[in-house]
Amino acid sequence: MSFNRRAVLRGLAAAGLTGGVATAAAAQALRTRKPVSSLGRDDPDIAALRRAIPVMRQSGAWDAQIAIHADMSHRHHSSWRFLPWHRLQLLWFERHVAAISGRPDFALPFWDWDDDRIPDLFLNDPVFRVPGRDAQPGDSITRFLTRNDQWLNGRLTDDFGTFFGRARRARDEGGRAYSGSAEWGGHNLIHGFIGGDMGRLDRSPNDPIFWMHHANIDRIWTLWRDKHAGQVFPKTWRNESLGGFIDPAGRPVAPALAQTTVDTASLGYVYKFDPTPPIVFAAAPGPPIMRRKSYSWAMQSMGPTSAFIDISPALARGQAEAATGYLEVMPDPHAASMVRFTARAKADGSVLFKDAVFLVPMGHAMGSQHYRIQLEDVWRGRGSGGIRLEIEAVPLVGRASSDRQTTLVDFFLDADLAFTAADQG
View 1 (tube, helix red, strand yellow):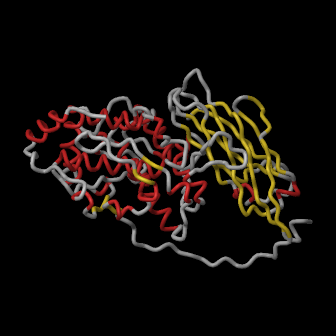
View 2 (view 1 turned 90 degrees about the vertical axis):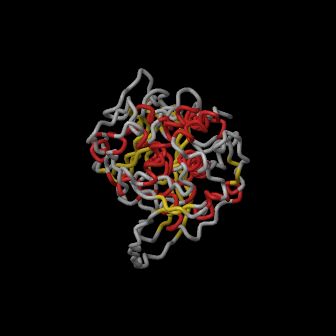
View 3 (view 1 turned 90 degrees about the horizontal axis):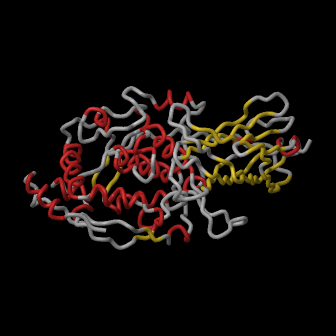
């Protein structure tokens, strides 16, 4: 992939930056990515973006980044390649900005979703403002979620398979992969919240907020890794070859293995962290386990958009040591939607557990999609009369709908249950 390098050089010359092109080695100096809300309009990293983006738009480099992300042959969505592939795309985008802006130590800021609103920079600055967003000034992520009867769940305690996604080995056919919660949780939610180009994966990098949104996802990966310091990444994941990127001159770069992306410092950057250590409480020992056994359930369809799984009173009394759902859907190709999971006690209908998988329109490029969901908490309420897990595909409230709908194709729930003497009744 190439673009108009002369236009890049003209833009650099106009800005007096022709001598400031960063080499890959220079880009390896350790940089700190900071929250955009902490940076003023004239912060050097914001100023670098403000200089670089118009030049990239003029030269075709901006469209090249959109095209790279839109090329689904990279398999960077709906698979465990999502986190490492996007980490590399951010890295190469960072190097583009460093080269064009003349700031070799440029560090891409991140948008911390805890700020709850689109940063003012993206609303008031003509370089960062784009038309067509669904989210309006003053819109709140929390209020958007409340309208959809959801909340933003933290995913740092999810295991590797749930957080990254992975193949479902036992029933997998043809190497099918599953999205992890790092993708279908906050990532997809924010794409749906912003809407406009951000609401379409084939156009989302056109909105400058995309880059700081993905920098936050990348930061969350570093937080997850801190909580899972002993995690040994599977060999098949480590050997995934990730490519499709271009250097600041528009030349293809060699693919990199996923194992090279685990440590951000080795890639030349770190994140600004809250130094407060987490509080850890020791759990009191529970009653002795009498037996363990694995169980599987398949959904019972009630129609194209709803289904359920019934868990008997005997099995509802067990303790879920692991429970994973494997969802296959045919998403609405034109409008954001979600699949809601609600576990209710069959005795009185009370809600024991809620979660949701957020879906982003991908046009017709990908066909059915697959998601891996951690569901141990379904058993947390210990419904004595049994549990019904309801699965429902719905459009996002407050966002454009289409004449298509997200349909449920398949859902399996696997659980490893442990029983004490009291559980066995």
